[in-house]
Length: 54
Image (spheres, rainbow, N blue to C red):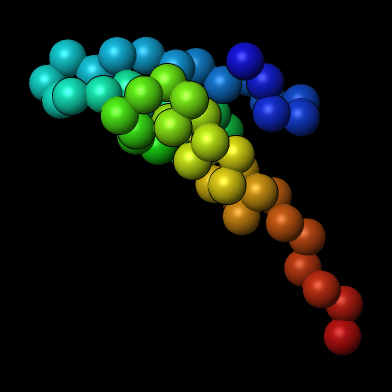
């Protein structure tokens, strides 16, 4: 899966219930693959936001 130019790796966590998504030094967790991916989209958006000009 991809978000813009970043690759997203989604995997099953061994010591927890659910899935994790890893992308651009961000890690998110979710009960399903889609939930982990949706949370990653929000995280990447926060990290890559450009600062507003004053």
